[in-house]
Length: 129
Image (cartoon, rainbow, N blue to C red; front, side, top):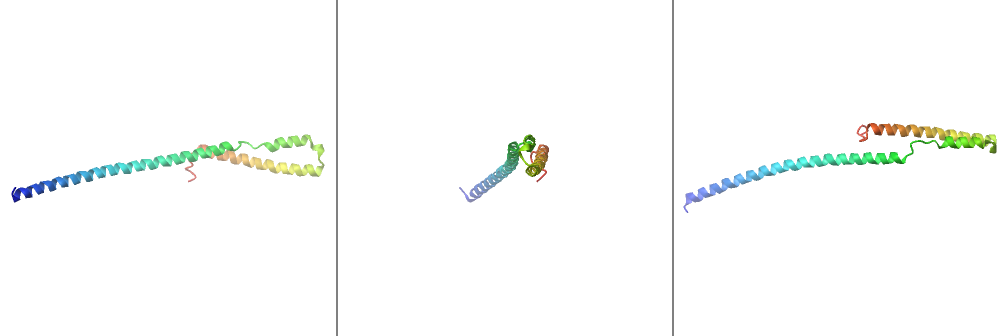
């Protein structure tokens, strides 16, 4: 083997190495792009899952709440049936208390229905964020 063949051989090996480096770099870039695209997809799916969990927790909370609060009206009607057992002062105090409870129940009902309407319009809660 002479010196010029050695130089040619070295040049060939160098060019092959360069070609391999380019292929490796292209493959790296290609897979790097795919990996970053997959990461974005995973992030979107995680956000969707989080939104679904939030939606489910809101639904569970709404299901735990009674949709009506009407206990005081029933209590008031039964109290009126037994009004003779109380003197006027006691009866008036009880009636004032029941009126307060009725007002609280009406507020509860309006809050419940407004929350329910808001949730049904936007289960993902995007308008409040």
